[in-house]
Image (cartoon, rainbow, N blue to C red; front, side, top):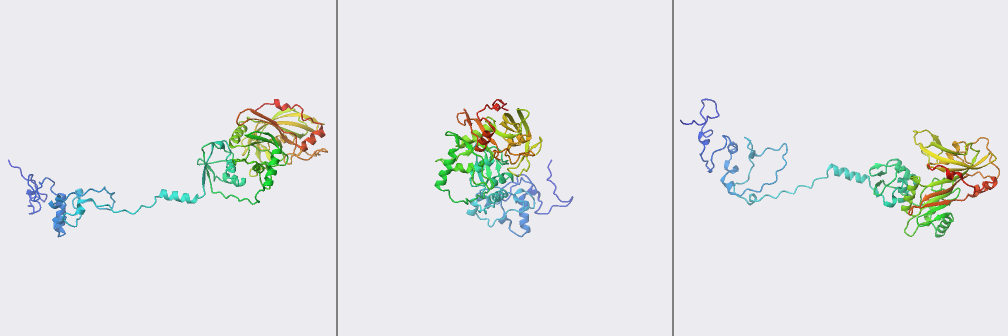
Length: 472
């Protein structure tokens, strides 16, 4: 039994046309003219290429990629597969009928075909969108500085940190930078009272540093300022000193304030360039103990002692009237009447009010004069602005000479007593920044308070009952 050859693909009963669908082309074992066996499909890629060449009137041999001439030439190195574009035609070698084979200029072997063609140098690609945004940001942030907090700056408030790093920058400008969110600490917005830790990254916006308008300080003025500061020293060692701040001398500069402790300390700048630093503050009209650190490390350690309430402070005051309870405790919330005013009057607020902070003070009456005046001793546990002055007024016994909180009706100042704030930072006990041992220093009465004490017959050496008051 013989096997019939497969039928042609034409209609039934129609004979295949000569030269197109000859059965001899599909019989196994039949060799082609180039010596290859016909084992592929009835319509191969080569057939399609030859047919397309004949339709164009070209010699199929000139575009025959499978011919003997092409086989004799070594195959060129295959370049990396390019990324195919959606609009690009498919390669003829993909086996799609009707697809166009790649054109070749000549069938003869060429040295260009023997070796891989060198890829043409593509034009340098432009910057990516991310790179463009980064470049734009760098342009906009020209002048931006990134500072790293040093170990000896640990615990510093962010506003004090800027003031220390940029002495020519006005303090009002520092507050504006922080308030507007232009300052970032580790990528986050910061508040003026935020504390810094070593290693933190502080991003500072472009600064317009004020050039000093005053004339260069003379050597004689430096000596006078240094001598004045040294005359106020109550205690001093290599790490710290405690000054007896006089009445009327501001601790820091401000609007219209030219002479202040912070500026005078510049006269004591050491050979290493380190200027003594403020650790805490006192009101301009409050006299008494003021702690100064000589190094950054001492300043950070002393500041931590204040925050942890390891420092103990005692204040003396002359108040109007005599309290019924000779020894007591005042606990309130205090907030500024004008939040934008740095020296605004403090008011007693409620818990939860905007800007309200808890304030705690212990008081004890040391002596009194004719049921008209009292010598009160205060021990503040917290350190709020105007805390003692506001608390004294809150219990009905404002401090004599206080221009902000004294509001007793029909009050007449006793003869011989000056109309000045009678408040003294009498005593301070704080751990030494290096040894940890307590440093106990007391300040004498300022001249106007000494005059009042003498007039009223108060003995400054009398026992102070506030010493036995609770610590917290």
